[in-house]
Length: 110
Image 1 (cartoon, helix red, strand yellow):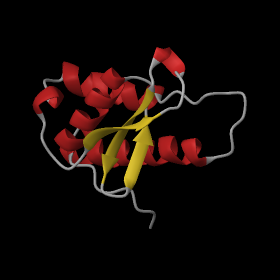
Image 2: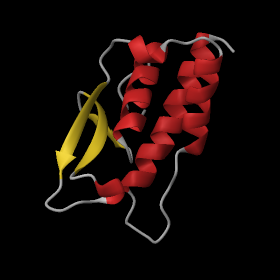
Image 3: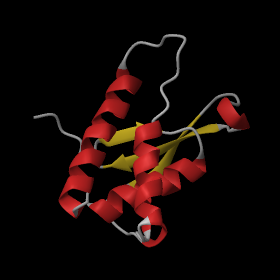
Image 4: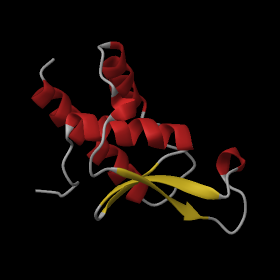
């Protein structure tokens, strides 16, 4: 798969993931399995996402009480105005590295 196809696929999956986070809450929790499957595929293909540097950063939002996984914060992957929440800090590290590795742009709707 070409780098451009990977970037386009990652961009589309990230838009779906973020759009789902912005919908009103319901009982189901969206799991970004296709996105993390793509990250797994890239790693198995030799991508060094753990050392990728770029504009996607890890941030967090503090919680007043412990949340999922016992964390007192929500891990966030951020680039300027784009933010995507993930469940664990490990997911945040992998996602930020992957997005930097494949050069995903700011999440702006066309």
